[in-house]
Length: 365
Ligand code: AMP
Image (cartoon, rainbow, N blue to C red; front, top):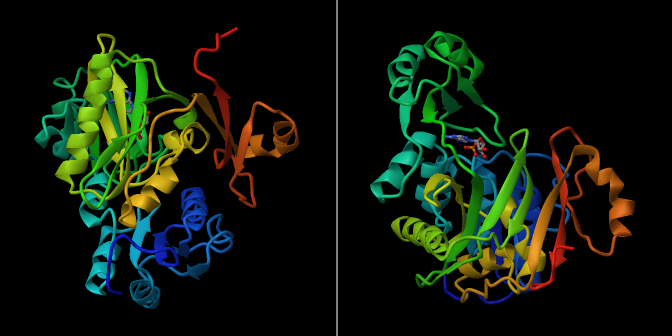
């Protein structure tokens, strides 16, 4: 397809991945007059039920990729474990991918990701690349004697991670992560977990949303509160990190960057997601232009929208059976309810979220 920007309404946007992020991207795209084609291996996905078209096929299905390349004006992704080779293949077939394969490839490997941040002068946890228990034993003293072992690839929501309690635990820890190539990270003594959602447009314009403060339970995001109360210096540093990351990757679209804040306000970057992010769902009700519309704007070559917060927002994920309380949530005037239409409420599965707004200046009482 010839690519002319800004894309006019009526253009087709391809989305790799059919989960809730794809669903909310499709809703945002529809609002701006675009259509979405989703590529998703699973039947009956959340995004398929709002998209104009769904290709139900594996991500590397040659025919499906040809169709995407032939019919979509731009292709993006909502799932960061789409093989980077698939995005390469799409580009070979003449498709235009945004954000592109390099951010995807870097984000898929925790060691590459940390080295990338280091190359930008952005502080991370100290770490070592691990190919077996001997590497764990060798690195552990330098990393503080107790450290976090994570698989290099395909970990999410705290999966594929385990604390190594000491050198004697090296062998067992290696088995606990499935004997897969891994990273060993020093424990970051953080006081808070923060994230920033930011976007870069086709002409290099950058916009950052206010920083969110995240709480996790059992490795899964439970709440995001935004805007987080931060010192001016910390806020400026978060934004500088987002800007450096977007520019170094020549990025187009929305990114999520997760950070740890230390007691003295210093920051350590944990990771970035080359896509819209769960900790940005508060923007759906807290900003004039939410992260999904912002991503659509960026990949379509439109100007970015306003990112300032209109209220304080607490976003709470509805996990597993919690979404079964939809009647009570629907009757709660303080709750803005988002449900993802997943057929089965499996344990630990993100089924929806709720945003609760508090106008600025309103007391806590
Ligand atoms: P991740 O999969 O890297 O997002 O890690 C999941 C969670 O584990 C994070 O949200 C933190 O709560 C915790 N965590 C990850 N890395 C570290 C670290 N180096 N030090 C302390 N806690 C960590």
